[in-house]
Image (cartoon, rainbow, N blue to C red; front, side, top):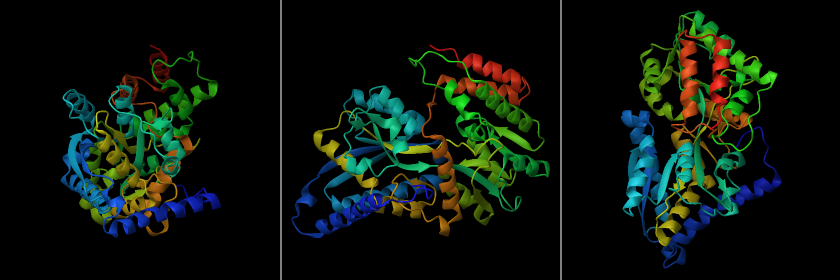
Length: 429
């Protein structure tokens, strides 16, 4: 997927074969009484998990419904006897809804959710492992699959990614800052900067100070069997550099931290903020509200490395109680979504997400937005930050948020916060 990795002859051959597959299916579909046309028949129930900003914004809600509608329409060109019922829920409510409906035998056949939600549902026994053919899994970026491998199958199948980038007001900032030092200079010159308090959205700043190794160590999965090991001196130094910078940023007059993503987005839309970190899924809303004022760029680097954004993966999770035919349909639909032609079409039509198929070339030369998204994804790949150990509702995320909030609002300085963070996160269950 990354333009930094040239496609070898083998990969090119695989890409050409994959590109030929949907064309062959469409051709087969046009023939009367073709067996492929009759192969799948039935109705599947598809749950869609939506983030709060989708639910609060009609433009984004209409956008995702339109994309899903086109995707299902294309799938039904090949399998016209298949019906798909869509049900939309807030992302944080999907797991509870699945639990409730599974008790009545009416659980979903397929779910489109965040990767972390899929991992949590699998750990709770609410989803099943699927033996995805190697011809399909081979097309997906290997790093994206690591969290979902289980035995000989996958607990979820990635379908597209949502990188984190910088969004800014072109009327207030003529050129996007490329470094964290430049970002604070822009603020000192009068441009109001908005930063998030949520650890998963603030994590991108850690890479610039060499703090990701320390955080990855402190955020090991709860109950890890390996004995606790002390941080190295280099880890301590990186963590302290990061916390000192956040403390310094919190003291800037025109740098403000927000606990709500919607407040950050609204501030940029209204012109109250000049620069924020945003996710690709926010671009539809921001583009509609800001028009040509919206600028999109990669996140700035720091003195010790590039930005380290956590990339959100949207994945298919597979229902546990489906009938054999519904399982076949669900898997066929999920595999169809990974097809290169489908992935490329979705990327070009949405301009707010990236394909997971590594053989799809993203047209970065013709779109500054896609170029920024691709750079954001490359930053995540460099740190392998896909669905990192923090899950929604994880108590360690609350600990990290509490410590950062206390420091940013003056209750502790960088060294004190470093000691508190290490002490609290090193307590193993």
